[in-house]
Structure formats: C-alpha cells, structure tokens
Amino acid sequence: MSEVIDGKLVAQHIRQKLKNDVEKLRENGIVPKLAVIMVGDNESSKIYVRNKSIACKEIGVEYKEYLLPEKTNMKELLELIDELNNDKSVNGVLLQSPIPKDLDINEAFKAIAPEKDVDGFNPCSVGKLCLGQDTFISCTPYGIIKLLEEYGIDIEGKDAVVVGRSNIVGKPMMQCLLNKNATVTICHSKTVKLERLTKKADILVVAIGKPKFITKEMVKENAIVIDVGINRDENGKICGDVDFDEVSKVASYITPVPGGVGPMTVAMLMNNIVKATKLQNKM
Image (cartoon, rainbow, N blue to C red; front, side, top):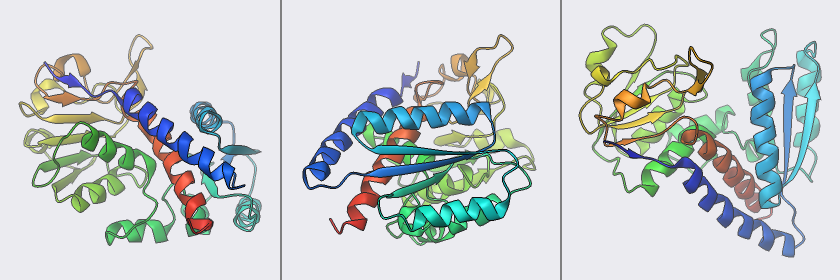
C-alpha cells in the first residue's frame, strides 16, 4: 500500500515560514501585495481565486482582485496589466486562466513585467527555467518538486513520465524534472501506446483532466505517482486523473485528490509573491 503524500501538511509548513518572512518585511515598512486579474465568470476560477485570497490573508499579503467582464477586449486587458506593472505598491501580477477564447492569453502573459510574474508564465521566466537560471517557476510544477523533496524522494537519475503537455503544467513540469537530472518523457493525446511509457516511470506525473484515467495496469510497481487532475466522477465526487484506490495498491507514494498538489500550488504562489517583494526591495 502506498504512502500518501500530504500536500496540505507540507503547504501548511511552507505558509508558516512565509508568514514569518512577511512579518519581518512589515517590520521594515514593506507590505507585499498581489494583484489578481480574472476575466469572465468561470466557476472554477472563482474557487481558485478565493483560495488565493484566503492564503494571502493568512500570511499577511495584501490582496486585490480585478474582475473584468466577459466582453473585455485585449486592449483593455493589456492596459490594466500595464497599469499594475507601473504601480510600485504591487509586487506580483497574476492573470487567472482560463480567459475568454477571443483573448490571447500568451500575449497577456508576455505583457506582465518579469519581476512581477509570480505565476511564471512570462516568456522570460519560461526561458530562464529552460536555462536552469533562477526565476519564478509556475506554481503547480514548483509545488510538485517541493513535495518530492519534502518526502526525501530523490529525482536524479529517475525515469520520469509526464502525461499532459500544457503550458501551465506539463511543459514546465518536464523542465523542472530535467533541471533535477531526471530522464523525462512527455506524453499527450497523440501518444501511441501510452501504457508502455507510463509503465516504465519511476515518477509519474498526470495532468490531463480525465477522471481516473490512469489505472493500476498502467503503473510500475513502487512508482511515485503525482496526480494533478481535479475532476468529478460519476457520483459528482471530486477525483483526480488517477484511479487512487487501485493505483495506491502498487505505487510507493501517491498524492490524493483533493489534498495533494492543490494546496502546494497556492503555497508556491505565496512563496513567489514573497520572493518578488524581496527582489524588488533588494533584500
């Protein structure tokens, strides 16, 4: 039976350390501030934004939301980003995805000042990650790396397989694992015979948005399984991309859904906003 990786507990420890850091910043008259932009009325986005707001309040980061209507055009969105880039009281700018399809999310990410890019999606941040340079790393992959490290799981030399190639999780996850000297295979919807690849993984990261897609037969004995998915099963219950009950019988470590990767994503956003504040104040 697997050891369940407790993302809630690890995230709690990280937030406590960050709370101490923020208290020291405030003693020096510096108040970290995060600006979050949400375009449209996506229900999932509302939940994610609320969780970020709660985390900010908990560690002492000032938080401000900018809720834009569905019909916002690209010019209006870019003007708001530019305004926040130039606002010295704002240390981090985050654009909540998804945004309406007629808007160019990559253009919007590119417009966010690299020094305020706490979500790690500006091309400058992505490029630095590929070069192994210090940068803001997108929060979900960063959180996964921190989870593995917290549990003493050595990444170097391992065969890692990432299922999903999104710009949000899959691609930066691949690069994070490469930077830790894993041998990485990335799979996607066009991959032929997916099972033969997932079956060889020492570390399997799944981020495809299909409930319970990864079964016990697709997982190597004693593999480390990281489930990024958040779905609803046939009974309306929250579940991941991995069939947890079955896969936990063969994996050595596994993340639950909820309570695994999700809390770490928010914790690493808090880490990035504190980091941005320190860098901008030359601390």
